[in-house]
Amino acid sequence: MLQQLGTALNAHRLLRVHTHGLIALDQESPNTTTAQEKGYERQTKRGSATRSWEGSARRQRTPRGSRSAGAASRIRGNVLRAAYEGQVTSLAEAYPTLQTFPDDDGLWLLARSSIIPGLAREAIFLVALPYSPGLGPRAWAFWAAADADPKWIGPRHTNFQDGSICAFSPNDGAWAEGGDLRTLLDLYSVWTLRHLYLDCFGRWPGKQYGLFGVDPRVAAFYRRIECEDDELCGCGSETRRYANCCKPADLQLDFGQSAALFLDQIEGGFASRVPPPAVVAFMEGLSGIPPIADVHIQIKSA
Ligand SMILES: [Zn+2]
Image: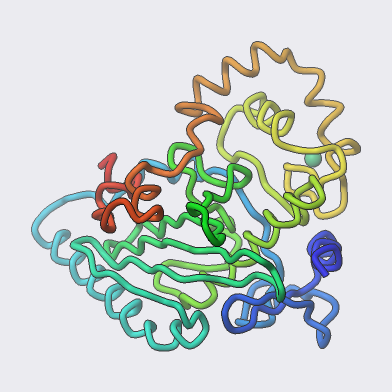
């Protein structure tokens, strides 16, 4: 079944996400269309491309301006609060283990997802949802297994600096701030399915993006480290495998020089893709839930 789902992701077929995050092939609509791609309705969703790093979005923050700008920002924050709080009941129907935790800066979600029937482990998502507009969610995924500490899911397609899930590109229309939280968790479920496939078959299934808004040599270095030959190319190609797409050109670049440029532009490099200690401690039951402000990279760095 996992193999079938991976094949479907490679072919850009629609997947359905059912209650508790169970994923299945969509038998009714075997082919994607542009409308379905954009609409991203629950249970008729396409496996959206995953992406690794929101480069230019990283340090953006709502400017603290005049009093009136502050008031406008607060009103928009109230809009997001209402949008999210109003969805808790419907989200709990889709993900029945849902727990929420209030926070000074937003709302925490904690929910389990079963991914595929019969799987011996479940995924747990911990999601920080800030109310202040422009920050966006930050989420971490862990495998829960009996008699063991939860195991972080990564590092492929997690964000640099905090190892948070990167399940879709902010500009591909899959989900927008204030949008349907079921869709958001469904995207995380499909991202986790890809990780499960990677664990079992050694390659990332489906379309994937690498780094945007960086020096092309940095993007090339990222692909050389991350992409397997038989995965769809990290340039976002829907048809070409890495070996037959960007790899020949990537190999032309000086490895040492590209590595140095990469480290210069990506703070901490690949090793920075680890979850914050406070998130891990919470997941291991060693501490309470951290303040969102302590772990959300854009609040922390503001
Ligand atoms: Zn390519």
